[in-house]
Image (cartoon, rainbow, N blue to C red; front, top):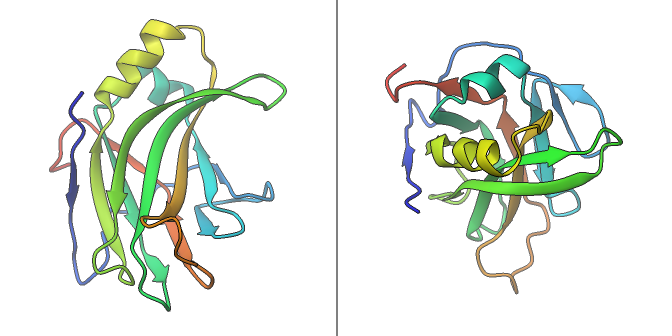
Length: 163
């Protein structure tokens, strides 16, 4: 399976327009972005039924604010995660991984989501509660990442990279 990511920058920040997307951070608060830290390394964005049905082949992820005082290597992984009606995670399918470079600068990435959607439809065709899960961790697990704080903006689903 090939997974690719293309970082795109405009003045250090990926510009994707404004579209409200329901997302939820680690303590259940809804907003238009999520914040990831060592204490709360994951968060998710709910997928609307029309997005799930359309299965867009590309997701654009933007990390407009990155605080990394130790400048340690950090990576983020994006998944299609599916949950039970009670909210328990039942499984997740990797869309792709990205690494920040420079490690303390805002960044944006395009990830190919088509294979993850195909796998979800094939193995879990009735999955209804699907979310884009974003998890962050240090590249070298032994490094302390105290003080690292990364904001993930609402994703943009695309049919083509240039949209």
